[in-house]
Image 1 (tube, rainbow, N blue to C red):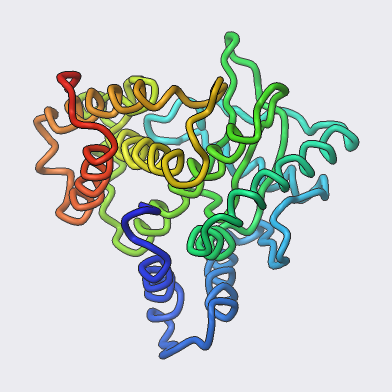
Image 2: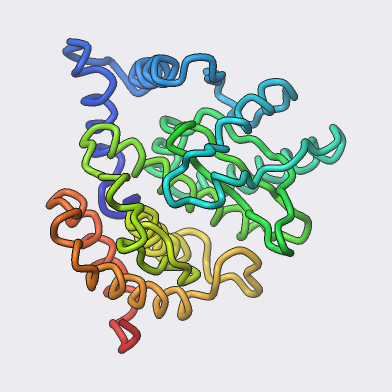
Amino acid sequence: MLSEVGFRTVVKTIYRLCCGRNGVESVNDVRELRRYYLDFLKEIYPGLPVNDTADPFIEDQTTEATLASAFQMHDALGNPDQQLGFIGEAYVASVKGAKIEQARAALGELLSVDNDLRSIFELVVHSVIIRAPKQRGGRISHSSSAATAVGVIWLSYVDGLSKQDLQELFVHELVHQLLFIDDFLHDEFRYDAMSRPENYALTALSLTPRPMDIVIHSLVVAAELVNARSRWIGEPAGPKVHPRTDSIVSTFWQSHGSLTALPSYNELVTPHIASIITKSTARMSRASPRDGGA
């Protein structure tokens, strides 16, 4: 998504979504486009805080708690994480402050290496909240984005994560954000049908059975993580969040094979969604030839 569409395509998508439908014929610059985008988010998420400052990191406890609450949906189709909730309690102020500074430094370094990446992130993401995760059977979540809070990224930022781990989480979540925005415009994900058990496939990073839309997201995320390591971040020595690249390549093709093998694939995957998947498979093919995993 990041490597294939570029900044201009993101701008066009957001313009069509937030300006074109309101009869706005032109915008002067990205700052003006961002104002229309934030106004759009305020309209579709009434009562949800929208941060219009240049600093995305949220320090106010009340704002943080309100944004965190938007991530739990008891009726989330086929997504047990969002049904049960995965964001825990707030960190104490001193701990949160230290984590914010470290995350801010990691993000700043990442965005400094590519102007398009910086422009996309600063346009799309208005808030980053850092809050402890819930513990569920020894498993925790490291980050999340949600269709119920586009523009907001949650990081758990548990102890032991490296700068590279944090940078990969920002890339990971930015891809989700762009896919949500794209679907706001095109409205082609049939979530009810895609969440039926017979339409589950394997996710691209962990090979976990999940609904079709989540698997499609995971394929794009996996391809962009490999791209980000190649272009900006480098291969991590001891990754704590995402697998090593050779493992991602292998599980990507297994996931892709499980998705395309679904009898409902051609019915539910529109040409536009298929084009997104194709760009990701092309990206992964360039990173490493397809093996026999799929």
